[in-house]
Image (cartoon, rainbow over all chains, first blue to last red; front, side, top):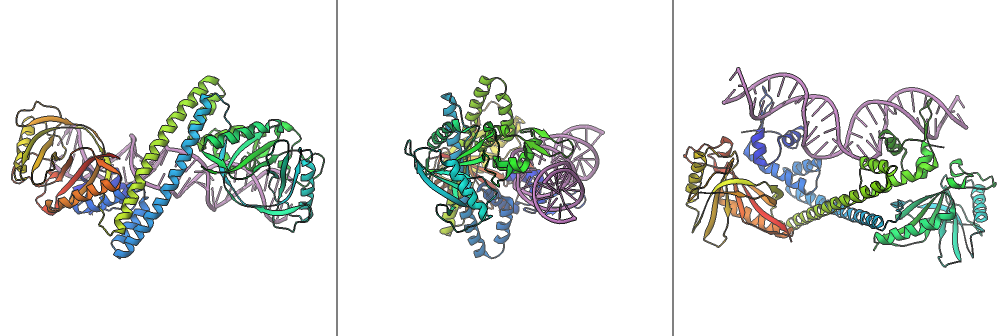
Length: 283
Length: 283
DNA sequence: TTGCTCCTCACGTCACGTGAGGTGGC
DNA sequence: TTGCTCCTCACGTCACGTGAGGTGGC
Protein backbone atom coordinates (compact mmCIF):
# COMPACT_ATOMS: atom_id res chain seq x y z
CA UNK A 1 0.00 0.00 0.00
CA UNK A 2 1.40 3.36 -1.06
CA UNK A 3 0.56 6.82 0.05
CA UNK A 4 -0.37 9.13 -2.78
CA UNK A 5 3.05 10.73 -3.29
CA UNK A 6 4.80 7.37 -3.34
CA UNK A 7 2.35 6.03 -5.89
CA UNK A 8 2.78 9.25 -7.86
CA UNK A 9 6.54 8.69 -7.94
CA UNK A 10 6.13 5.09 -9.05
CA UNK A 11 3.77 6.01 -11.83
CA UNK A 12 5.54 9.24 -12.82
CA UNK A 13 2.37 11.32 -12.62
CA UNK A 14 1.51 14.11 -10.20
CA UNK A 15 -0.44 13.54 -6.99
CA UNK A 16 -2.91 16.14 -8.25
CA UNK A 17 -3.63 14.01 -11.27
CA UNK A 18 -4.23 10.97 -9.06
CA UNK A 19 -6.71 12.96 -6.97
CA UNK A 20 -8.40 14.14 -10.14
CA UNK A 21 -8.69 10.59 -11.48
CA UNK A 22 -10.18 9.58 -8.16
CA UNK A 23 -12.69 12.44 -8.33
CA UNK A 24 -13.91 11.46 -11.78
CA UNK A 25 -13.89 7.73 -10.96
CA UNK A 26 -11.20 6.83 -13.46
CA UNK A 27 -8.84 5.31 -10.89
CA UNK A 28 -10.04 4.85 -7.33
CA UNK A 29 -7.45 4.19 -4.59
CA UNK A 30 -7.44 0.59 -3.38
CA UNK A 31 -8.31 1.82 0.07
CA UNK A 32 -9.21 5.12 1.72
CA UNK A 33 -8.65 5.54 5.44
CA UNK A 34 -12.08 6.56 6.74
CA UNK A 35 -10.50 8.57 9.58
CA UNK A 36 -7.97 10.67 7.71
CA UNK A 37 -9.35 10.37 4.16
CA UNK A 38 -5.81 9.46 3.09
CA UNK A 39 -5.71 7.62 -0.22
CA UNK A 40 -3.81 4.34 -0.43
CA UNK A 41 -2.83 2.61 -3.68
CA UNK A 42 -1.43 -0.83 -4.46
CA UNK A 43 1.22 -1.95 -6.97
CA UNK A 44 -1.31 -3.87 -9.04
CA UNK A 45 -3.09 -0.61 -9.85
CA UNK A 46 -0.07 0.50 -11.86
CA UNK A 47 -0.92 -1.28 -15.14
CA UNK A 48 -4.31 0.41 -15.24
CA UNK A 49 -2.74 3.79 -14.61
CA UNK A 50 -0.13 3.19 -17.29
CA UNK A 51 -2.86 2.30 -19.73
CA UNK A 52 -4.66 5.51 -18.86
CA UNK A 53 -1.52 7.55 -19.53
CA UNK A 54 -0.88 5.75 -22.81
CA UNK A 55 -4.46 6.30 -24.03
CA UNK A 56 -4.19 9.94 -23.00
CA UNK A 57 -1.06 10.16 -25.15
CA UNK A 58 -3.07 8.88 -28.09
CA UNK A 59 -5.32 11.89 -27.67
CA UNK A 60 -8.35 10.35 -25.96
CA UNK A 61 -10.25 12.40 -23.45
CA UNK A 62 -10.62 11.09 -19.91
CA UNK A 63 -14.29 10.19 -20.29
CA UNK A 64 -13.50 8.17 -23.41
CA UNK A 65 -10.71 6.40 -21.54
CA UNK A 66 -13.14 5.64 -18.75
CA UNK A 67 -15.51 3.99 -21.24
CA UNK A 68 -12.70 2.00 -22.86
CA UNK A 69 -11.41 0.71 -19.53
CA UNK A 70 -14.91 -0.09 -18.32
CA UNK A 71 -15.63 -2.27 -21.35
CA UNK A 72 -12.20 -3.86 -21.01
CA UNK A 73 -13.28 -5.70 -17.90
CA UNK A 74 -16.43 -6.87 -19.70
CA UNK A 75 -16.74 -8.73 -23.01
CA UNK A 76 -13.25 -8.92 -24.50
CA UNK A 77 -14.16 -8.91 -28.20
CA UNK A 78 -16.49 -5.96 -27.85
CA UNK A 79 -13.74 -4.02 -26.17
CA UNK A 80 -11.23 -4.66 -28.93
CA UNK A 81 -13.67 -3.76 -31.68
CA UNK A 82 -14.69 -0.69 -29.80
CA UNK A 83 -11.08 0.38 -29.32
CA UNK A 84 -10.47 -0.22 -33.00
CA UNK A 85 -13.38 1.99 -33.94
CA UNK A 86 -12.38 4.72 -31.56
CA UNK A 87 -8.81 4.64 -32.81
CA UNK A 88 -10.04 5.11 -36.36
CA UNK A 89 -12.10 8.08 -35.25
CA UNK A 90 -9.03 9.44 -33.49
CA UNK A 91 -7.01 9.06 -36.66
CA UNK A 92 -9.57 10.98 -38.70
CA UNK A 93 -9.72 13.68 -36.08
CA UNK A 94 -5.94 14.06 -35.91
CA UNK A 95 -5.69 14.20 -39.70
CA UNK A 96 -8.29 16.93 -39.72
CA UNK A 97 -6.37 18.89 -37.13
CA UNK A 98 -3.13 18.41 -39.05
CA UNK A 99 -4.67 19.84 -42.22
CA UNK A 100 -6.07 22.74 -40.21
CA UNK A 101 -2.73 23.57 -38.66
CA UNK A 102 -1.01 23.28 -42.03
CA UNK A 103 -3.39 25.83 -43.51
CA UNK A 104 -2.91 28.07 -40.49
CA UNK A 105 0.84 27.87 -40.92
CA UNK A 106 0.50 28.88 -44.57
CA UNK A 107 -1.62 31.87 -43.55
CA UNK A 108 0.94 32.97 -40.97
CA UNK A 109 3.75 32.67 -43.50
CA UNK A 110 1.83 34.59 -46.15
CA UNK A 111 1.29 37.34 -43.62
CA UNK A 112 4.99 37.37 -42.80
CA UNK A 113 5.84 37.77 -46.49
CA UNK A 114 3.38 40.65 -46.71
CA UNK A 115 5.02 42.41 -43.80
CA UNK A 116 8.52 41.91 -45.11
CA UNK A 117 7.53 43.40 -48.47
CA UNK A 118 5.72 46.16 -46.60
CA UNK A 119 2.45 45.46 -48.35
CA UNK A 120 -0.79 46.48 -46.71
CA UNK A 121 -2.43 43.30 -45.54
CA UNK A 122 -6.07 42.60 -46.10
CA UNK A 123 -8.04 40.61 -43.59
CA UNK A 124 -8.89 37.51 -45.56
CA UNK A 125 -10.87 34.82 -43.79
CA UNK A 126 -11.92 31.31 -44.77
CA UNK A 127 -15.39 29.99 -44.04
CA UNK A 128 -18.12 27.83 -45.49
CA UNK A 129 -21.23 29.24 -47.14
CA UNK A 130 -24.62 27.54 -46.88
CA UNK A 131 -26.73 26.70 -49.96
CA UNK A 132 -29.27 29.35 -50.93
CA UNK A 133 -32.24 29.60 -53.26
CA UNK A 134 -32.18 32.76 -55.35
CA UNK A 135 -33.93 34.53 -58.18
CA UNK A 136 -31.26 35.42 -60.73
CA UNK A 137 -30.71 37.14 -64.01
CA UNK A 138 -27.58 36.62 -66.05
CA UNK A 139 -26.30 38.92 -68.74
CA UNK A 140 -23.18 39.76 -70.68
CA UNK A 141 -22.35 43.37 -71.34
CA UNK A 142 -19.38 45.60 -72.11
CA UNK A 143 -19.75 47.42 -68.76
CA UNK A 144 -21.86 47.39 -65.60
CA UNK A 145 -24.22 50.26 -66.30
CA UNK A 146 -27.22 47.96 -66.40
CA UNK A 147 -26.55 46.18 -63.10
CA UNK A 148 -28.76 48.33 -60.95
CA UNK A 149 -31.75 47.83 -63.23
CA UNK A 150 -31.16 44.08 -63.32
CA UNK A 151 -31.29 43.95 -59.49
CA UNK A 152 -34.45 46.03 -59.48
CA UNK A 153 -36.13 43.63 -61.88
CA UNK A 154 -35.19 40.56 -59.84
CA UNK A 155 -36.15 42.20 -56.54
CA UNK A 156 -39.61 42.96 -57.94
CA UNK A 157 -39.91 39.37 -59.05
CA UNK A 158 -39.15 38.15 -55.51
CA UNK A 159 -41.59 40.66 -54.04
CA UNK A 160 -44.33 39.42 -56.35
CA UNK A 161 -44.05 35.92 -54.85
CA UNK A 162 -43.57 37.30 -51.32
CA UNK A 163 -40.52 35.04 -51.23
CA UNK A 164 -37.75 37.58 -50.53
CA UNK A 165 -35.41 36.08 -47.92
CA UNK A 166 -33.90 38.30 -45.27
CA UNK A 167 -30.44 37.92 -46.82
CA UNK A 168 -28.28 40.32 -48.80
CA UNK A 169 -28.34 40.30 -52.63
CA UNK A 170 -25.18 39.34 -54.46
CA UNK A 171 -23.58 39.21 -57.87
CA UNK A 172 -21.72 36.33 -59.47
CA UNK A 173 -18.80 37.02 -61.83
CA UNK A 174 -18.94 34.26 -64.43
CA UNK A 175 -16.60 35.56 -67.12
CA UNK A 176 -13.43 37.44 -66.56
CA UNK A 177 -12.53 38.69 -70.04
CA UNK A 178 -11.23 42.25 -69.76
CA UNK A 179 -13.71 44.94 -70.78
CA UNK A 180 -16.52 42.43 -71.16
CA UNK A 181 -18.66 41.29 -68.26
CA UNK A 182 -20.61 38.06 -67.80
CA UNK A 183 -22.48 38.58 -64.57
CA UNK A 184 -25.48 37.12 -62.75
CA UNK A 185 -27.40 39.12 -60.20
CA UNK A 186 -29.01 37.07 -57.42
CA UNK A 187 -31.69 37.82 -54.84
CA UNK A 188 -32.12 35.23 -52.04
CA UNK A 189 -35.51 33.58 -51.71
CA UNK A 190 -37.21 31.91 -48.77
CA UNK A 191 -38.33 29.04 -51.01
CA UNK A 192 -38.18 27.67 -54.53
CA UNK A 193 -40.66 29.38 -56.87
CA UNK A 194 -41.13 28.86 -60.63
CA UNK A 195 -38.88 31.16 -62.64
CA UNK A 196 -40.19 33.08 -65.64
CA UNK A 197 -37.94 34.45 -68.35
CA UNK A 198 -35.78 36.46 -68.12
CA UNK A 199 -35.69 35.80 -64.35
CA UNK A 200 -34.39 32.38 -63.42
CA UNK A 201 -34.73 30.59 -60.05
CA UNK A 202 -31.98 28.24 -58.90
CA UNK A 203 -30.20 26.96 -55.85
CA UNK A 204 -26.59 27.92 -55.21
CA UNK A 205 -24.85 24.90 -53.66
CA UNK A 206 -23.00 24.86 -50.36
CA UNK A 207 -19.41 26.07 -50.72
CA UNK A 208 -17.05 24.26 -48.37
CA UNK A 209 -14.25 26.81 -48.37
CA UNK A 210 -14.83 30.39 -49.34
CA UNK A 211 -12.04 32.94 -49.08
CA UNK A 212 -13.69 36.18 -48.00
CA UNK A 213 -12.69 39.79 -47.65
CA UNK A 214 -14.93 42.63 -46.51
CA UNK A 215 -14.65 45.99 -48.21
CA UNK A 216 -16.11 49.12 -46.67
CA UNK A 217 -16.69 52.27 -48.67
CA UNK A 218 -17.48 53.11 -52.27
CA UNK A 219 -17.03 50.68 -55.12
CA UNK A 220 -14.12 52.64 -56.58
CA UNK A 221 -11.49 50.68 -54.63
CA UNK A 222 -13.18 47.27 -54.97
CA UNK A 223 -10.59 46.09 -57.55
CA UNK A 224 -7.83 46.44 -54.91
CA UNK A 225 -9.75 44.10 -52.64
CA UNK A 226 -10.21 41.64 -55.52
CA UNK A 227 -6.51 41.74 -56.24
CA UNK A 228 -5.64 41.20 -52.56
CA UNK A 229 -8.00 38.24 -52.39
CA UNK A 230 -6.43 36.55 -55.41
CA UNK A 231 -2.93 37.24 -54.11
CA UNK A 232 -3.81 35.77 -50.73
CA UNK A 233 -5.27 32.70 -52.40
CA UNK A 234 -2.06 32.03 -54.28
CA UNK A 235 0.25 32.70 -51.33
CA UNK A 236 -1.70 30.29 -49.16
CA UNK A 237 -1.52 27.44 -51.63
CA UNK A 238 -5.18 27.55 -52.66
CA UNK A 239 -6.68 27.85 -56.11
CA UNK A 240 -9.94 29.32 -57.25
CA UNK A 241 -12.53 26.64 -58.08
CA UNK A 242 -15.51 28.75 -59.09
CA UNK A 243 -16.82 32.20 -59.90
CA UNK A 244 -16.38 34.96 -57.33
CA UNK A 245 -19.35 36.53 -55.59
CA UNK A 246 -19.83 40.12 -54.56
CA UNK A 247 -22.24 40.28 -51.61
CA UNK A 248 -23.90 43.62 -50.94
CA UNK A 249 -24.15 43.74 -47.17
CA UNK A 250 -24.96 47.44 -47.22
CA UNK A 251 -25.74 49.49 -50.28
CA UNK A 252 -27.99 52.09 -51.85
CA UNK A 253 -31.27 51.15 -53.51
CA UNK A 254 -31.72 54.59 -55.01
CA UNK A 255 -35.37 55.68 -54.93
CA UNK A 256 -36.81 52.33 -55.92
CA UNK A 257 -38.90 51.79 -52.76
CA UNK A 258 -38.04 48.13 -52.64
CA UNK A 259 -39.17 46.19 -49.57
CA UNK A 260 -35.72 45.50 -48.25
CA UNK A 261 -34.66 45.09 -44.61
CA UNK A 262 -33.47 48.57 -43.57
CA UNK A 263 -30.19 47.23 -42.24
CA UNK A 264 -29.05 46.65 -45.82
CA UNK A 265 -29.59 50.22 -46.92
CA UNK A 266 -27.62 53.45 -46.71
CA UNK A 267 -27.36 56.56 -48.82
CA UNK A 268 -23.79 57.26 -47.80
CA UNK A 269 -21.29 55.59 -50.14
CA UNK A 270 -18.57 55.61 -47.44
CA UNK A 271 -20.85 53.27 -45.49
CA UNK A 272 -21.24 50.71 -48.24
CA UNK A 273 -20.22 47.26 -47.07
CA UNK A 274 -19.35 44.64 -49.66
CA UNK A 275 -17.97 41.17 -49.17
CA UNK A 276 -16.02 39.48 -51.91
CA UNK A 277 -16.13 35.70 -51.83
CA UNK A 278 -13.98 33.30 -53.81
CA UNK A 279 -14.62 29.52 -53.72
CA UNK A 280 -11.22 27.88 -53.18
CA UNK A 281 -9.63 24.52 -52.60
CA UNK A 282 -6.12 23.45 -51.60
CA UNK A 283 -3.42 22.87 -54.25
CA UNK B 1 -26.09 52.61 -35.99
CA UNK B 2 -26.89 48.92 -35.87
CA UNK B 3 -28.45 46.85 -33.17
CA UNK B 4 -26.36 43.92 -32.15
CA UNK B 5 -28.01 41.28 -34.34
CA UNK B 6 -27.79 43.49 -37.43
CA UNK B 7 -24.12 44.15 -36.80
CA UNK B 8 -23.63 40.44 -36.20
CA UNK B 9 -25.18 39.68 -39.59
CA UNK B 10 -22.99 42.27 -41.31
CA UNK B 11 -19.85 40.92 -39.74
CA UNK B 12 -20.82 37.24 -39.95
CA UNK B 13 -20.13 36.59 -36.27
CA UNK B 14 -22.58 35.71 -33.50
CA UNK B 15 -24.14 38.29 -31.21
CA UNK B 16 -22.72 36.31 -28.31
CA UNK B 17 -19.22 36.88 -29.62
CA UNK B 18 -19.86 40.60 -29.92
CA UNK B 19 -21.03 40.72 -26.30
CA UNK B 20 -17.96 38.77 -25.28
CA UNK B 21 -15.64 41.16 -27.14
CA UNK B 22 -17.40 44.01 -25.40
CA UNK B 23 -16.93 42.36 -22.02
CA UNK B 24 -13.20 41.92 -22.49
CA UNK B 25 -12.78 45.36 -24.04
CA UNK B 26 -11.71 44.10 -27.45
CA UNK B 27 -14.49 45.83 -29.36
CA UNK B 28 -16.75 48.26 -27.54
CA UNK B 29 -20.03 49.29 -29.19
CA UNK B 30 -19.98 52.84 -30.57
CA UNK B 31 -22.81 53.70 -28.23
CA UNK B 32 -24.74 52.05 -25.43
CA UNK B 33 -28.22 53.28 -24.59
CA UNK B 34 -27.99 54.11 -20.87
CA UNK B 35 -31.67 53.30 -20.37
CA UNK B 36 -31.95 49.92 -22.01
CA UNK B 37 -28.26 48.90 -22.08
CA UNK B 38 -28.77 48.07 -25.75
CA UNK B 39 -25.50 47.99 -27.70
CA UNK B 40 -25.26 50.00 -30.92
CA UNK B 41 -22.50 49.61 -33.50
CA UNK B 42 -21.47 51.67 -36.56
CA UNK B 43 -20.31 50.56 -40.00
CA UNK B 44 -16.82 51.96 -39.44
CA UNK B 45 -16.28 49.42 -36.65
CA UNK B 46 -16.37 46.64 -39.23
CA UNK B 47 -12.72 46.82 -40.34
CA UNK B 48 -11.53 46.43 -36.75
CA UNK B 49 -13.80 43.46 -36.24
CA UNK B 50 -12.63 41.88 -39.49
CA UNK B 51 -9.04 42.31 -38.38
CA UNK B 52 -9.91 40.63 -35.08
CA UNK B 53 -11.42 37.66 -36.91
CA UNK B 54 -8.44 37.39 -39.26
CA UNK B 55 -5.93 37.45 -36.40
CA UNK B 56 -7.99 34.87 -34.58
CA UNK B 57 -7.76 32.69 -37.69
CA UNK B 58 -3.98 32.98 -37.51
CA UNK B 59 -4.18 31.38 -34.08
CA UNK B 60 -3.73 34.39 -31.82
CA UNK B 61 -5.53 34.47 -28.52
CA UNK B 62 -7.89 37.34 -27.80
CA UNK B 63 -5.58 39.03 -25.31
CA UNK B 64 -2.76 38.98 -27.85
CA UNK B 65 -5.10 40.48 -30.44
CA UNK B 66 -6.05 43.18 -27.97
CA UNK B 67 -2.37 44.09 -27.54
CA UNK B 68 -1.75 44.10 -31.28
CA UNK B 69 -4.73 46.33 -31.99
CA UNK B 70 -3.86 48.65 -29.12
CA UNK B 71 -0.36 49.24 -30.46
CA UNK B 72 -1.77 49.69 -33.96
CA UNK B 73 -3.30 53.01 -33.01
CA UNK B 74 0.00 54.06 -31.43
CA UNK B 75 3.44 54.11 -33.01
CA UNK B 76 3.12 52.54 -36.42
CA UNK B 77 6.62 51.03 -36.78
CA UNK B 78 6.52 49.44 -33.37
CA UNK B 79 3.25 47.80 -34.29
CA UNK B 80 4.59 46.28 -37.49
CA UNK B 81 7.76 44.98 -35.84
CA UNK B 82 5.75 43.62 -32.97
CA UNK B 83 3.32 41.87 -35.31
CA UNK B 84 6.28 40.44 -37.20
CA UNK B 85 7.78 39.04 -34.00
CA UNK B 86 4.52 37.61 -32.83
CA UNK B 87 3.88 35.99 -36.20
CA UNK B 88 7.26 34.30 -36.00
CA UNK B 89 6.43 33.00 -32.55
CA UNK B 90 3.11 31.77 -33.92
CA UNK B 91 4.90 29.96 -36.72
CA UNK B 92 7.22 28.20 -34.29
CA UNK B 93 4.31 27.26 -32.10
CA UNK B 94 2.27 25.89 -35.00
CA UNK B 95 5.26 23.89 -36.27
CA UNK B 96 5.68 22.39 -32.81
CA UNK B 97 2.03 21.44 -32.69
CA UNK B 98 2.24 19.94 -36.18
CA UNK B 99 5.14 17.72 -35.15
CA UNK B 100 3.26 16.71 -32.03
CA UNK B 101 0.15 15.75 -33.95
CA UNK B 102 2.22 13.86 -36.53
CA UNK B 103 3.78 11.77 -33.76
CA UNK B 104 0.38 11.20 -32.21
CA UNK B 105 -0.98 10.04 -35.54
CA UNK B 106 1.89 7.56 -35.86
CA UNK B 107 1.13 6.22 -32.38
CA UNK B 108 -2.53 5.77 -33.22
CA UNK B 109 -1.68 3.99 -36.45
CA UNK B 110 0.82 1.70 -34.75
CA UNK B 111 -1.85 0.79 -32.24
CA UNK B 112 -4.29 0.04 -35.05
CA UNK B 113 -1.76 -2.28 -36.67
CA UNK B 114 -1.28 -4.05 -33.34
CA UNK B 115 -5.00 -4.61 -33.01
CA UNK B 116 -5.41 -5.86 -36.56
CA UNK B 117 -2.64 -8.38 -36.04
CA UNK B 118 -4.17 -9.27 -32.69
CA UNK B 119 -0.98 -8.53 -30.81
CA UNK B 120 -1.14 -7.64 -27.15
CA UNK B 121 -0.35 -3.95 -26.93
CA UNK B 122 2.04 -2.54 -24.39
CA UNK B 123 1.50 0.89 -22.96
CA UNK B 124 4.48 2.74 -24.29
CA UNK B 125 4.76 6.41 -23.37
CA UNK B 126 7.15 9.17 -24.44
CA UNK B 127 8.59 11.64 -21.96
CA UNK B 128 11.74 13.54 -21.12
CA UNK B 129 14.14 12.51 -18.37
CA UNK B 130 16.03 15.06 -16.29
CA UNK B 131 19.83 14.90 -15.83
CA UNK B 132 20.99 12.98 -12.78
CA UNK B 133 24.24 12.55 -10.87
CA UNK B 134 24.98 8.93 -10.05
CA UNK B 135 27.59 6.63 -8.61
CA UNK B 136 28.17 3.90 -11.17
CA UNK B 137 30.09 0.76 -11.80
CA UNK B 138 30.46 -0.71 -15.25
CA UNK B 139 31.37 -4.31 -16.03
CA UNK B 140 31.25 -6.83 -18.82
CA UNK B 141 30.28 -10.37 -18.02
CA UNK B 142 28.84 -13.48 -19.67
CA UNK B 143 25.70 -13.28 -17.51
CA UNK B 144 24.10 -11.14 -14.84
CA UNK B 145 24.91 -13.14 -11.72
CA UNK B 146 27.08 -10.36 -10.32
CA UNK B 147 24.56 -7.54 -10.75
CA UNK B 148 23.18 -7.64 -7.26
CA UNK B 149 26.62 -7.42 -5.68
CA UNK B 150 27.56 -4.55 -7.96
CA UNK B 151 24.53 -2.60 -6.78
CA UNK B 152 25.34 -3.34 -3.17
CA UNK B 153 28.85 -1.99 -3.60
CA UNK B 154 27.68 1.22 -5.23
CA UNK B 155 24.90 1.73 -2.68
CA UNK B 156 27.44 1.44 0.15
CA UNK B 157 29.62 3.99 -1.64
CA UNK B 158 26.72 6.45 -1.78
CA UNK B 159 25.88 5.81 1.85
CA UNK B 160 29.44 6.55 2.89
CA UNK B 161 29.12 10.06 1.45
CA UNK B 162 25.56 10.46 2.74
CA UNK B 163 24.78 11.47 -0.81
CA UNK B 164 22.11 8.89 -1.73
CA UNK B 165 19.31 10.69 -3.61
CA UNK B 166 15.72 9.68 -3.03
CA UNK B 167 15.50 8.23 -6.53
CA UNK B 168 15.38 4.65 -7.82
CA UNK B 169 18.58 2.84 -8.90
CA UNK B 170 18.91 1.83 -12.54
CA UNK B 171 21.03 -0.15 -14.92
CA UNK B 172 22.36 0.91 -18.31
CA UNK B 173 22.73 -1.65 -21.10
CA UNK B 174 25.78 -0.58 -23.07
CA UNK B 175 26.49 -3.64 -25.17
CA UNK B 176 23.94 -5.87 -26.73
CA UNK B 177 26.01 -8.78 -27.99
CA UNK B 178 24.09 -12.00 -27.35
CA UNK B 179 25.28 -13.97 -24.32
CA UNK B 180 27.69 -11.25 -23.27
CA UNK B 181 26.65 -8.29 -21.16
CA UNK B 182 28.18 -4.83 -20.89
CA UNK B 183 26.23 -3.17 -18.13
CA UNK B 184 26.59 -0.21 -15.79
CA UNK B 185 24.75 -0.07 -12.49
CA UNK B 186 23.85 3.42 -11.29
CA UNK B 187 22.74 4.83 -7.94
CA UNK B 188 21.44 8.43 -7.97
CA UNK B 189 23.27 10.98 -5.82
CA UNK B 190 22.16 14.27 -4.31
CA UNK B 191 25.44 15.88 -5.41
CA UNK B 192 28.68 15.29 -7.21
CA UNK B 193 31.25 13.50 -5.04
CA UNK B 194 34.73 12.27 -6.03
CA UNK B 195 34.65 8.74 -7.40
CA UNK B 196 37.13 6.13 -6.30
CA UNK B 197 37.91 3.04 -8.33
CA UNK B 198 36.07 0.84 -9.11
CA UNK B 199 33.13 3.16 -8.39
CA UNK B 200 32.79 6.07 -10.79
CA UNK B 201 30.73 9.23 -10.36
CA UNK B 202 29.21 10.89 -13.40
CA UNK B 203 26.24 12.89 -14.57
CA UNK B 204 23.74 11.34 -16.94
CA UNK B 205 22.54 14.05 -19.34
CA UNK B 206 18.97 15.13 -19.92
CA UNK B 207 17.21 12.89 -22.44
CA UNK B 208 14.71 14.80 -24.55
CA UNK B 209 12.63 11.87 -25.70
CA UNK B 210 12.58 8.62 -23.82
CA UNK B 211 10.26 5.81 -24.87
CA UNK B 212 9.14 4.14 -21.65
CA UNK B 213 7.28 1.01 -20.68
CA UNK B 214 6.50 -0.12 -17.15
CA UNK B 215 6.74 -3.81 -16.32
CA UNK B 216 5.19 -5.22 -13.17
CA UNK B 217 6.12 -8.62 -11.79
CA UNK B 218 9.22 -10.76 -11.81
CA UNK B 219 12.13 -10.26 -14.16
CA UNK B 220 11.36 -13.45 -16.11
CA UNK B 221 9.14 -11.67 -18.63
CA UNK B 222 11.24 -8.52 -18.94
CA UNK B 223 12.52 -9.53 -22.39
CA UNK B 224 8.96 -9.39 -23.74
CA UNK B 225 8.70 -5.80 -22.56
CA UNK B 226 12.03 -5.00 -24.19
CA UNK B 227 10.87 -6.53 -27.44
CA UNK B 228 7.60 -4.59 -27.32
CA UNK B 229 9.48 -1.36 -26.70
CA UNK B 230 11.75 -1.86 -29.69
CA UNK B 231 8.85 -2.86 -31.90
CA UNK B 232 6.91 0.21 -30.84
CA UNK B 233 9.91 2.41 -31.57
CA UNK B 234 10.18 1.11 -35.11
CA UNK B 235 6.46 1.26 -35.84
CA UNK B 236 6.31 4.86 -34.72
CA UNK B 237 9.15 5.99 -36.94
CA UNK B 238 11.66 6.50 -34.15
CA UNK B 239 15.14 5.05 -33.80
CA UNK B 240 17.17 4.28 -30.72
CA UNK B 241 19.89 6.87 -30.09
CA UNK B 242 21.46 5.52 -26.91
CA UNK B 243 21.70 2.67 -24.44
CA UNK B 244 18.51 1.46 -22.76
CA UNK B 245 17.99 1.88 -19.03
CA UNK B 246 16.24 -0.45 -16.64
CA UNK B 247 14.89 1.54 -13.70
CA UNK B 248 14.08 -0.39 -10.54
CA UNK B 249 11.06 1.38 -9.18
CA UNK B 250 10.33 -1.47 -6.75
CA UNK B 251 12.59 -4.39 -6.06
CA UNK B 252 14.13 -6.63 -3.42
CA UNK B 253 17.33 -5.66 -1.62
CA UNK B 254 17.72 -9.09 -0.09
CA UNK B 255 19.01 -8.86 3.49
CA UNK B 256 21.56 -6.16 2.82
CA UNK B 257 20.12 -3.58 5.25
CA UNK B 258 20.70 -0.77 2.83
CA UNK B 259 19.31 2.63 3.81
CA UNK B 260 16.80 2.83 0.98
CA UNK B 261 13.44 4.61 0.97
CA UNK B 262 10.95 1.88 1.92
CA UNK B 263 8.72 2.67 -1.04
CA UNK B 264 11.33 1.07 -3.32
CA UNK B 265 11.39 -2.23 -1.51
CA UNK B 266 9.28 -5.38 -1.58
CA UNK B 267 9.91 -9.03 -0.96
CA UNK B 268 7.19 -10.19 -3.29
CA UNK B 269 8.49 -10.68 -6.85
CA UNK B 270 4.98 -10.23 -8.29
CA UNK B 271 5.16 -6.68 -6.93
CA UNK B 272 8.40 -5.76 -8.62
CA UNK B 273 8.02 -2.65 -10.74
CA UNK B 274 10.57 -1.99 -13.46
CA UNK B 275 10.59 0.72 -16.08
CA UNK B 276 12.46 0.22 -19.31
CA UNK B 277 13.62 3.42 -20.98
CA UNK B 278 14.98 3.83 -24.48
CA UNK B 279 16.37 7.18 -25.71
CA UNK B 280 14.85 7.79 -29.14
CA UNK B 281 14.64 10.37 -31.86
CA UNK B 282 12.49 10.71 -34.97
CA UNK B 283 13.60 9.10 -38.29
C1' DT C 1 7.60 19.34 19.26
C1' DT C 2 8.56 20.41 14.29
C1' DG C 3 8.39 19.85 9.68
C1' DC C 4 6.33 17.01 6.20
C1' DT C 5 2.42 15.13 3.99
C1' DC C 6 -2.07 14.78 3.33
C1' DC C 7 -6.87 16.57 3.08
C1' DT C 8 -10.81 19.54 1.04
C1' DC C 9 -12.54 23.51 -1.00
C1' DA C 10 -12.35 27.18 -4.42
C1' DC C 11 -10.67 29.63 -8.17
C1' DG C 12 -8.36 30.12 -12.77
C1' DT C 13 -7.63 28.56 -17.55
C1' DC C 14 -10.00 29.81 -22.95
C1' DA C 15 -13.61 31.61 -25.82
C1' DC C 16 -17.45 31.47 -25.90
C1' DG C 17 -22.48 28.38 -26.07
C1' DT C 18 -26.56 27.52 -23.67
C1' DG C 19 -30.27 28.25 -21.04
C1' DA C 20 -33.00 31.09 -17.27
C1' DG C 21 -35.60 34.84 -16.24
C1' DG C 22 -36.83 39.33 -17.20
C1' DT C 23 -37.77 43.57 -20.19
C1' DG C 24 -37.88 47.25 -24.19
C1' DG C 25 -39.78 48.22 -29.01
C1' DC C 26 -42.73 47.92 -33.15
C1' DT D 1 -51.43 43.28 -27.41
C1' DT D 2 -48.05 39.79 -29.13
C1' DG D 3 -43.99 38.14 -30.63
C1' DC D 4 -39.29 39.49 -31.29
C1' DT D 5 -35.06 41.25 -29.60
C1' DC D 6 -32.31 42.61 -26.23
C1' DC D 7 -30.41 42.50 -21.49
C1' DT D 8 -27.76 40.29 -17.38
C1' DC D 9 -26.42 36.60 -14.67
C1' DA D 10 -24.79 31.90 -14.09
C1' DC D 11 -23.20 27.58 -15.41
C1' DG D 12 -20.62 24.31 -18.47
C1' DT D 13 -16.54 23.13 -21.24
C1' DC D 14 -11.33 20.24 -20.30
C1' DA D 15 -7.79 18.48 -17.31
C1' DC D 16 -5.87 19.71 -14.20
C1' DG D 17 -2.42 23.68 -11.53
C1' DT D 18 -2.27 26.76 -7.86
C1' DG D 19 -2.89 28.53 -3.62
C1' DA D 20 -5.63 28.78 1.10
C1' DG D 21 -6.42 26.95 5.32
C1' DG D 22 -6.43 23.17 8.19
C1' DT D 23 -4.83 18.53 10.08
C1' DG D 24 -2.62 13.60 10.74
C1' DG D 25 1.94 11.06 11.37
C1' DC D 26 6.83 10.19 12.51
